[in-house]
Length: 113
Length: 113
Image (cartoon, rainbow over all chains, first blue to last red; front, side):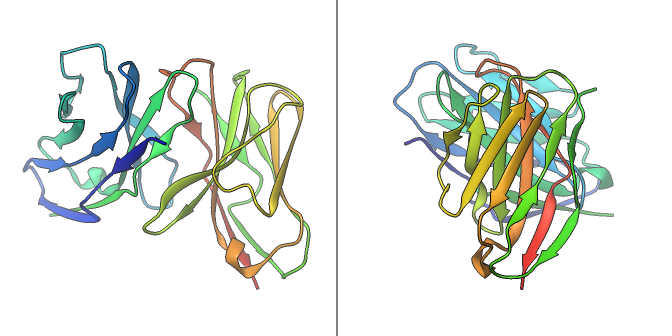
């Protein structure tokens, strides 16, 4: 079975600074998708960013970008110019065709004003 | 925007009761999922459905059942609630395809006393 590991249960960042959340995964597949989801306190989980494994270029969405290292099976999320609204639980997730979505255990991000 | 609506944000039930958690999505998504979320464990898949009247067991189906009589509605049933089923329950829906992001409801925080 696929596994997704987030080794940082909690992280903290100063407002306007940059923070990187780590994620590693284990798979024998060559074609798959990776996701970062954000769950703000008492609010709905939403998609932050998605990466296709066949694409070498790292995905970016405004202040959010990923560092996708396929050989190392690493998929980290970088948040630039952190804002108070970025405070949330962040989940890394993996899915291959015909398989279910597998989540990591999450990283709780605090943003200090 | 996709809307996934869960019938209750908070629910308190007693051990042995039969509990129904309802989920409705308004975007004609084929796939629907039920997860439970526990601190330090991330999201774990209970059941999912790829079509009306179809259901598949996830990673932790014991003690649960589901019903999908209509495409837009996916119900989770706790046949005889137990205290170890106290948790946050999340419903999600998505279109077909591993690349498709999942859309989540607000969650139901269920307490079994």
